[in-house]
Structure formats: structure tokens, C-alpha cells
Length: 74
Image (cartoon, rainbow, N blue to C red; front, side, top):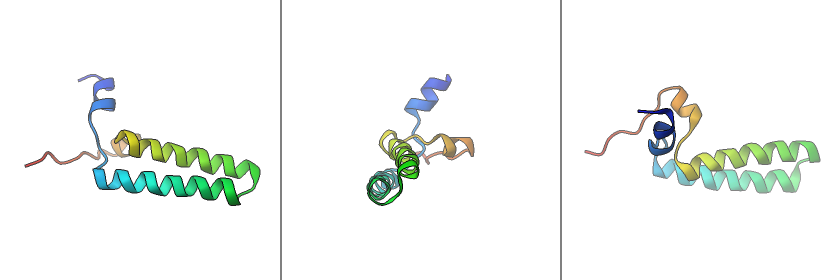
């Protein structure tokens, strides 16, 4: 299987965790832009947006790097 098929078709983040990632990242973006100083607010908001993207897509490259896979439904 090619890299692109594995990267975009194989999910390695379960649905419950995906919801938590999106909610936590959106809260962190709001906190960063509202309370942190200018250079750090953009850094934290950008990393939180990347965290939310992994929740929306369902694939986390860091989880794939350590070999995390979802169990097949039984």
C-alpha cells in the first residue's frame, strides 16, 4: 500500500478522541488569542489548529510514528 493511501485512508484516532481533540484545540485557540502576548499567541494558536486538524481528519502523524492503529471492529 502506498504512503498516500495509508496517510489519508487509514484512521488511527478513535471517534471519541477526535471530538475531544477538536473541542480542546478550539478552546486553546480562544485562550491563546485572548490572553497571551502577541508572538506566543500565534505560536500556540497555530499548534492548536494543527491539533484540531488531526481530530478533523482522523489521522495523527505522531501516533502513526509510534505505531498506533485502531482495532478492527469485531
